Image (cartoon, rainbow, N blue to C red; front, side, top):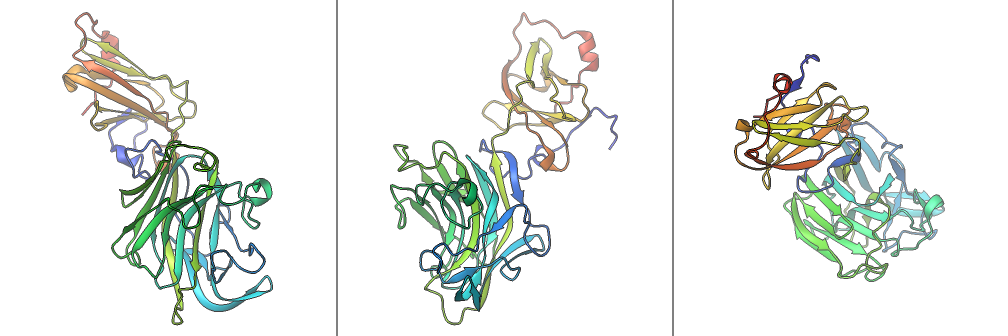
Length: 388
């Protein structure tokens, strides 16, 4: 690319390629694993939880040992595989007939959107889950336990993004466990899907201060929104971390040998941070509108995007150098009506992970008022009238 060029027009979608929910306020990618490595999982992102919580077994009558071996959890071909295996395995003085893996993310957050693309293991007795627990849970062996483990379950709160019981194929559920309802919780919803074993589906959870919404492949199927929020109904106002595991329960059949949950990616989005020094403004002239801003420190360029209020964001103009920090849009390019505009500045145009989002909207109406002045000629000469 010619770095001396002041502008280039490109698709807005390339800049937010990691975001799939365009109506969500949680659009900034803050943590992810694309599983592009080979062999063991990324130890900087994941903790293997293997310690038996009561010295003998896991809860819910589960039959497996969780291990940190690559036989039970590994990445290859752009995917994570959590593999449940029928095998005799001894650990912590206890011998069990099944092994699997349980991963804790070393990242915790409050409010946001989790997106996971996965295929599920097959067979009665398999119990894969994508879920979350409060960072403050007092469960020995968890990644955050030593520093933050002060609250017992379910007061810590549990968010089950996806659970699947192999005895009920293709039915996935989402649930919340709180002091007011836990175990066989009433706060649960589910949906039947086509072929969860051989087909990737996208499991998504959006957690805001008001509600928690669950969806699959972009289709919402359950919302938790208690009429009254208190510690009994809403222990969801502090950090939670992610868990990925495949358990084995008492429904397991004698002929089960092994099966894996394959995860293509895990992504967490939160609201973009707004830099108060950015200060985007608009100034209406009789022959157009000037959009200007203060370039944030570290930004190499900005994108301007606009469209009718209530419609989509419209086309984009990207200023790829640190100057100019404005665009001038000819009135003839827009026509009558109310418009919104958005400016996003980036520390890197590509890859999308490098975006630093300083987004702001402004609304203005065309045609400009009759007593508006014309834009100065020097502004028109330097202006970037590239709206398309």
